[in-house]
Length: 235
Image 1 (cartoon, rainbow, N blue to C red):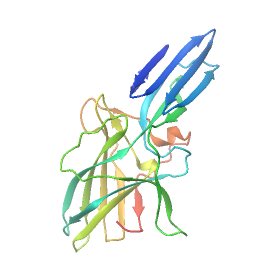
Image 2: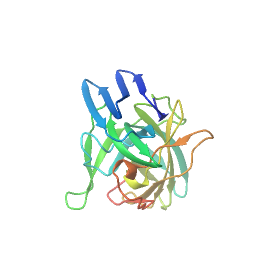
Image 3: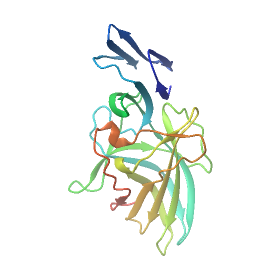
Image 4: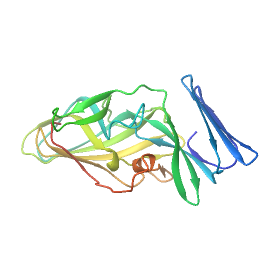
């Protein structure tokens, strides 16, 4: 389903349907997912329609700017690096584009969102929460429902450290996709059992993968990129 489309569109996948139709200079848009039907009329026909994976931060409302992936404890020795593979859920974004500019038209997902508070009630962050298994190699997962996270955990401390979660801010998340996989490459620098820094790489993990529109595009924000997120409430 992911890709760039021109003209009338008719897509169907795993109970999700998406279609557009030109009608007398107007474009009708109709999408169904989990029994929900969304219909819109575009007065300005787009030059292209982009269907891309987006981070799971927008449904049912954009209440969180952070993604927390929790997993069984991984123990990393002092000065050592461990590469593990995790998974996290996705949402699907539909973008209408004209003259190289793309605006979000629709975002949907068949999955229900779960949230948590990372940190204290005073300075904590509301985060989209998910739980993942730990794998030594990229696990198989339906690319329309979940993404693979390759996480390099670098222990900069002087002691063995247990890592059981990774938190990313929306402006630090970059996704890449092909016909089979949605992928994110993350790096986590661990300084203690309470402080770490996370970021993701802005390059495809393998040749032929396409970059998804970044998170700020789905929020119509200016591309002010922090590049890193400091985890200060435990790893």
